Amino acid sequence: MFEQRQTKNMFSAGLTTVALIYHMTVYKLRKGDRSAIIGLLMTVVRACLMVAVFFVLFMVLGVRSSPIRGSFIVYIMSGIFMFMTHNQAIQAVVGADGAVSALMKHTPMNTAITISASALAALYQQLLCCVVLLLLANAFIEPVNIENIYACLGMFVLAWFSGCCIGLVFRALEPWWPKGVNMISMLYRRLNMISSGKMFVANALPSSMLAMFSWNPLFHVIDQTRGFAFINYTPHNSSVIYPIYFSLAVAMIGLMGEFVTRNSQSLSWSAGR
Image 1 (spheres, one colour):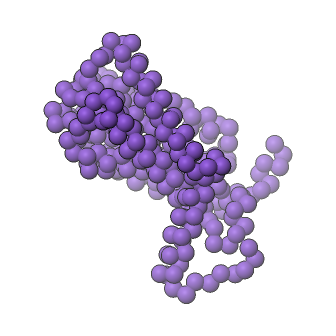
Image 2: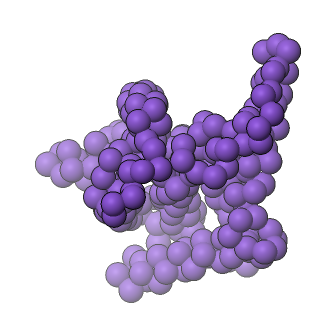
Image 3: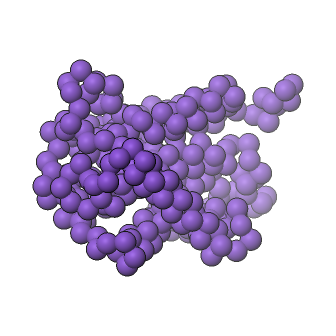
């Protein structure tokens, strides 16, 4: 803890950082449950419940087939997986250990490592859920046919990356207004239930309603994912470029805010609360 570490070169420092991120990612995965396997199973069960809820909801609404010609289960999962990954990435980054955490007393640790580890842990959990649910659906419901699985995987990573970038902004603002930022973060995640467009097809939206959804990067990610998943669907009201540029711009804002907050934050902030 009190030893001053000196790295010989940049390569050694890079290996040390990668090793710390790996160990912190494992720590994050095992932190919530005593058994890592039970924790991962609970994550899969939660994802199964969400898919089942939306499946029943569509049945109650009378939507018994996909609005796009193809598999109904792929249509549902293409929206739910992106939605869950985006929201979990935001929650993971916001909840990562900060500058005043006890972990920061250990010399190699810094906030970049804890943020990266939390984000990677969320990505690992969601990717595992995605693979398991697709295998279960293929085995017990109907054969799952995805036209361009590699492009869909790229959109999955983009949904995670955009969530991490938005989470950085919330994280930078949280120490200045903890309750308000937590409320705004939760409101944004709840708003994604509708504004992400996972319950409808973007091509079917009239131009008057398109402006209500086109601001959301997750709306573009989900619509483009369906374009890659279904051979009979070509997105006209969304773009791959927009969520990339949006995420990079928000990431720069979040990193600058995190730098300012980290240098200003202290343990005495919450002393009078």
